[in-house]
Length: 261
Ligand code: ADP
Ligand code: MG
Image (cartoon, rainbow, N blue to C red):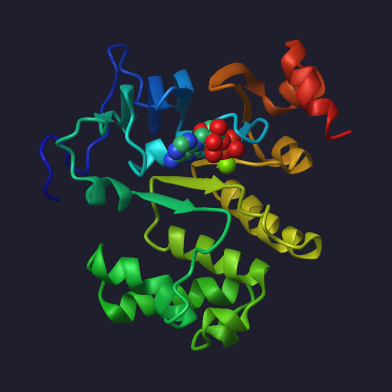
């Protein structure tokens, strides 16, 4: 890897000797002109942890996720990936993104590439994985989501739900240290949501470290270790999923959750 002050490999430990979290955000601030969107976010995601970001539309969830893989600059704060500062402007953003899988709401696949090429492209070009290895892994993963027969097809032959599962499979092909999911089911017809959630559930069960924005409260309760409620660019409340979703302490959290009853 190139990029000043950024190498892959060892995990750093903090002063107490505990391993660094996969992700550490400290006092993340971001404004668009006069509009302050993130007002000092502190958040850690530990290895193998699944953290769900919830909050109303406009609360800053997507902006926060985009800051993590350096798609969105921050005005202030610190972002560490496995103990290394990735918010330093000298860091090679492509090298960082190669270690983080990300799937967004929609438009994730390249329409002019086959499903298999979509799934293997980054592995081959960014990670320099040999084609045979990438395609072997890609076909295995496609088979695991029931899409082996679509490897040579173009994405427009797939339903939205199938496309999202392909996008998720692509994001995990190179075993990223962190998987970011931004409302991956919210553009889907309701009958297509279940299969996508099942895939995320199986990744979570397999130990993938996940930070996800979601409006699927039942899913968050079931799969997330921790739920973080964002409102107006601040973390209003966070804690174990069952506690935050079933017995929220803050009035703003209660008001937000009442919309889902
Ligand atoms: P969420 O994902 O929780 O719905 P977002 O992070 O998308 O929230 O947006 C938070 C706020 O930031 C919104 O008010 C949105 O309009 C604003 N915003 C997001 N991106 C931009 C941008 N590129 N320029 C201006 N405002 C933006
Ligand atoms: Mg969003």
